[in-house]
Image (cartoon, rainbow, N blue to C red; front, side):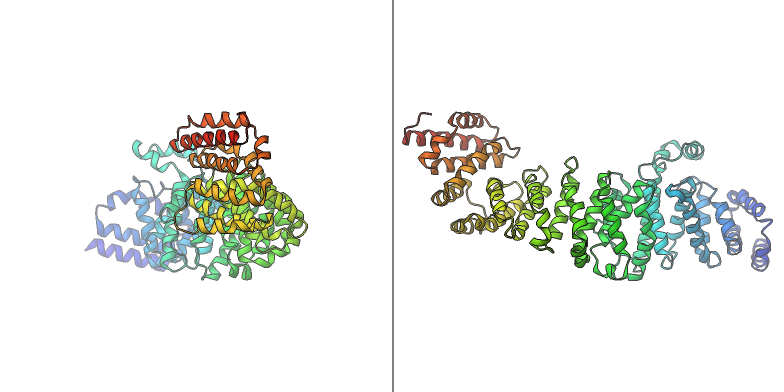
Length: 568
């Protein structure tokens, strides 16, 4: 047919003379775009037009890409011709080779000064259409990945520029506007598409967060968590790929954009645990920048930097020994960030990892401060904080040396009440940690006789009754050291007001066991009026277990006082 003949001649002419069309390029493209809605009705003609644009692109890639990027975004549902153009260029061998490279160059320009322009969003949308056709990304993946991650970071929590929205209202239906007005969502969709292609090519692996990764990544409150999950999805066996990504991403740690610094720090914090990357990568430079960020005013940035410092213990233990002073000072500082428990928890975890590699002489200067700060988190409302603090305290027992042995023994006396009560913590992991720390700490007090009770009562699957355990424990303790029994009593009142009913109940039962085993001399020292008042108040507790424990304790207190002829 004539249509076929014209199409064949046009393609042939473009293959031969396409390079000479530079001056007429814009006019030719505008003519094609103008007639596309009509040509779309005739499939055969339409395919020739797409082939023609692909041929022109093979000679004038940058110009054609720049021209199409001025069209409505490919993710918009209305301008389907734009999506069709990108897909056609990606699928045609004549144009696909240079296309992704040209888009990467455009995206890099659109992210200058660490600010995402509207052009950068357009490029990301175009990339989505190109990569979704199956275009290989292997040769360009490190650069493509880091640029898109930067775009996600720079658009985090942002809305479309006002001028763009005003224009888009003319081409988007009212119901669709809300869906497309989030540039971070568009950026994240493109990065997801690239990661899927990278997995098909063996350059990455499935995230441990699954599809939830992308929701985490695009939300300002969880972005850093998503970045960490994304970093863990890197294929460590692809050394060259990850090392290239690290080189491209290093500048993010000193970016003028706070969001981009958080993104880079979070990503590197996970890589710090990989020995192979320490061997071949730039993580020595990253360590210094991490230490600086650990003092930043932004809590999330501090948290991620401290995580990176802690993970250094896994990836490069020798670096911990070499840089112990600056690392300890930065991490300990995080224990004072009381307004943000995530920073505190990260600091506790990092200390636990690092202290396992150090000796008592390495830690001696900081030991007292670490112990005192760690103790303040035994009653934290966050399970993770409580658990990590108790485990860290256990580790500290091996670092006392001769200098701090007596000091640590005194701190154990003050802390024992927490360990005993939290054996019945609502979180069973914390209960198990308390048992372990008691076994480690008992020798500091010369109470090895208590081992049998801990082993006998806590080795089984089920916890014993709290009342039975405390009574047996206090009987043994009373015979060995009445002073410690008294110290337990003086610290117990605080726990009568605990937010956890199990702890309130345990505190009353422990108090009951203490009163029954104190000598007459110590019973006379009891503030019986205060103790009676508190126990009577607990008889009105919402928890029946607490009510019953308080009633039983009151009766035993009365009987104990009568035994030694003390008026109540």
